[in-house]
Image 1: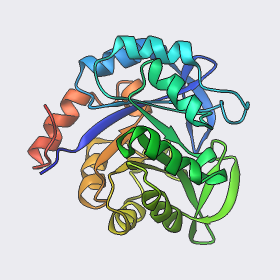
Image 2: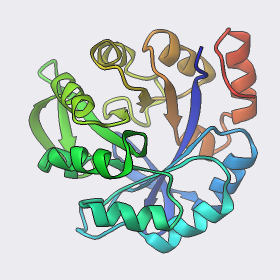
Image 3: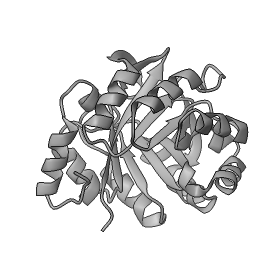
Image 4: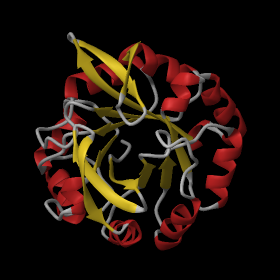
Length: 251
């Protein structure tokens, strides 16, 4: 059985880690390099770094900060934000990223997924999908959740997998920051439709929420931010808790 992964997420704005609720009302959550080092030392399986304002500001990801974080950790490192080309990915990989996460650029140019998978391998390409329900239907949103589309979440997840993505990072915008748990029904539906790993994101509030994401949502990994940044959940304790629930994790 594959072990389930626990992944802290650094949402970066103006060089600092930030966290909000439902993608708004951002507050400072600390120095990204210091947080990354702590997570690497306390049992995180991977780290995700999302430059959340890069797309909106129409610029590339902060390479210097990516390099600093990469040098501070010894776990797999995924970077997203402002990635629009093969060249962007080459620059990130040269500066310490192990994988990249694309979101808005993939929707605007779906062939980018194929290009990156062919050039770097599917294992290097994660596609992030931010979605929320509109009139009961899950719709994909772009530009840090600010731009709604008519694209159905589940249709897009299938297309992403078919185009060669190695995994999907699904964030429920309506669960994000609420600490009410992950969107497990939607997670489970995605897991039934595709045969690539799904990372659950948005809504972690307590340790049981992670259990539910794995058991009810059938997620392969669970990502969280504020509960880790502000010390509400310690990763070492979370993994011990999951182990007691018979969920395979790397201790």
